[in-house]
Length: 209
Ligand code: ADP
Ligand code: MG
Image (cartoon, rainbow, N blue to C red; front, top):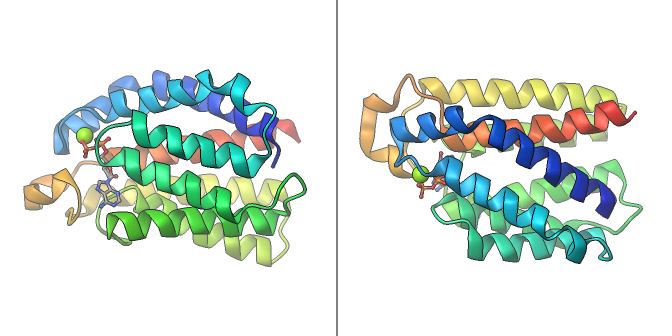
């Protein structure tokens, strides 16, 4: 993973988030407080505006810097959670010549940080219902030595399934936890934005091949 790729990916992610304003806003209006789109938009804009400062840095420092910046710019529950993902992923990443396995391990370290910070796990109707299965699948496929395009296509499908699965769940973490059964029938907004981000990054890699 190269710094130029992270910068390009952040621009594509920003575009995707802006294109899904209605979806992200209405999902959080249904089972949260309606600010998830604003939070994600602000986070994405902050990262793309950092491009010139990030360009000369090594990928681990880039991820760390993004995490620290998100901590102070995105509000809500999602800000500190996503910030801890980037900071922990940065700590585990080897620079420049990181193998796919190292990237998968660093991704897993980022997801673990979200689990620890949010005290949440699979099945609680959060972003982790996308991130945990994607991380597990990423590790499994890299350990099996699968090629990049197979991995990308599989992770896109895994993210989609995880996102859709949140629809039938009752929330036990976050704002939706107070809704009980009324949360059933609605996709979790954080799961939707993580699915969008993972899909965008995987498509970028697929189109680059
Ligand atoms: P807030 O809930 O403070 O308004 P956002 O609307 O930006 O913040 O983000 C809501 C999303 O954050 C939820 O949809 C869920 O995916 C995620 N989330 C909330 N609490 C947790 C938690 N403890 N662990 C993991 N994810 C969480
Ligand atoms: Mg919200």
